[in-house]
Every structure is written in structure tokens, then in C-alpha cells.
Length: 348
Image (cartoon, rainbow, N blue to C red; front, side, top):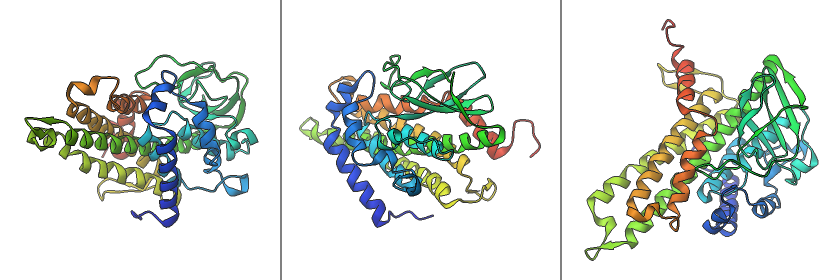
């Protein structure tokens, strides 16, 4: 696995880093609340070709790898940008496997998303990420992979992270695949969503650390910057180490997808190359790291950290909300444990 960015990857990082720094200051994030979507920012992002960059060149896309998309997702997380880049990228890649991507989706004139929580037959998809703003939703209904296009509700239940969530109905949708083929395609798409969300959570962690370090150097008590106090240093000292681990596991998940690595899950030899397993590991670990980092960064701000005028609270809320979109993390932990160690009660 390669750890250094290639020249092309470094260019992607610089281009989208500059885009979000210029186009998405914290004021844009605040203005987009409570829905959590800025159509103007999405239109400007679409003008860069981002909505189609993850599609194969043969389908009119940019041919970007999952690693490339993860680089963009990290920049989305750094800016906590109110755009459904992750959801749209994953959904269009899934739809492309079945030749179901429209020109509007490719250009970003329409938005697609993945219902990460499967629905039973006759039920609705619950709390779909970007479901409040996406006209196209794809997900599992029983053992069928279904895509449905219907007007986006444009409203979301109030939630801690100001995410454009919504329940969506699969009624009247088109079945793309059934049985094992549907389950396999959905598993890959969900793993891609976990990987890109993990990259975005890495971005949140980086920004939280930057905000904390800036504040503790500027804030003075007893004629000294509070960052010189050991109690403050101890709060922040562990974040860079955890951040490096989060960066590594998110990058390894993307690498496993791009490299077509063999599906190895060998805990005894610490050899795990299975993409779906690594994606779950990355999602869970980066969720914990982002929560820890934003918590400590917020407390480094003292009482100001809880004030709406300070940016750290924006990151604090999203670090927790983004990690809950797929449901209770403890259930994901149990599923991952079953994959790695076998179900409870099974023979070792």
C-alpha cells in the first residue's frame, strides 16, 4: 500500500482544498442550517466536474478512483461543506454498474443518494442521507436493489448535525438487480459510502485540531497563551496520533477497493485486505477519533466552545451526526466482530 500522494492526487487535494476554502467559509455552513444544503455551492462544485468524477470515462465521467474521491471527501469534511458529494458519488457509481446514470446526474443538475439502511418489502427507507435534497434514491428493498426518482421533499427533521435527512418511499421504483447480485452490489456501495464518510471525518478531525491550536495560542491567561499550560497540552497531545491512525485506515480501505485486493480477513496474522471489512473498520474508527478530537478541541475553547459564534461547535455536532447516519454504531461493531472473529457461540 502506497502512503505518499501521487502528483495527480496532490493536484486533486490542492484544487478542491482551494475550492472549499474559497467557496465554503463557516458563514456558508451557518447559512445552510438547518437543512444542511447550499444549492449555490453545489452548483459551483458541479461546475468543477465533481459529480461525475467517480464515473468511468466510458460513461462520460472522470475515471477517478475511490482514493481520488476520498481526497475530495476529506476536503468536504475539513470545510463541513453542506453538499452531498459523498452520497452522490457513491449512488452514481452504483447506478453506472446497471447503466442507469442520466445526463442530469452526471452533470450535477440532479442529485442521487444511497439509502444506507435497507428497507423491508412495503416499507420506506429510513433517514436517507441527502434524502431531503436528492431526486434519485437507490437502495435495497428486501433482496431487490431498487432505484426511484421522485421530487425531493426539501425539508428534513431537525437533527444535531443539520443534515438533509429524509424518509423516502421506494414505491414505483425500478428493480436493478435481485438476490445475490443485488446484495453484493449494495454491499460494495455501502462500503464506498463508509470509506468516503471516513475520509470526511478525517477532514473534520484535522480542522478541529487546527481550530484548537489556533485558539490556545491566541487566548491568554496570566499573561501567557493558554496553550503553554500543561493541562491544555495534555488534552490535545493525543489527537495527532489518533489522526494519523484514522488517515491510514481510511486510506487502506480506499486502496483495497482500487487495487482489487483479495478478500483476506486473517486476524491472527493481522492481515486484512477485504474492502468491506476495512470500510467498516475505517468508518467506526474515524467516527471515534472525530468525536474525541472535536470534544477536546471544544473544551480547549472553554465556555466559548459551546457558543454558536465559535466554529468548533459546528464540527463537534457534525462529527457525531455523520457517524449515526447508518444507524447504531454498536450494531456495526457487532457485525464487524462477527466478520473478523466469527459469530458469538461459533467455534474458533
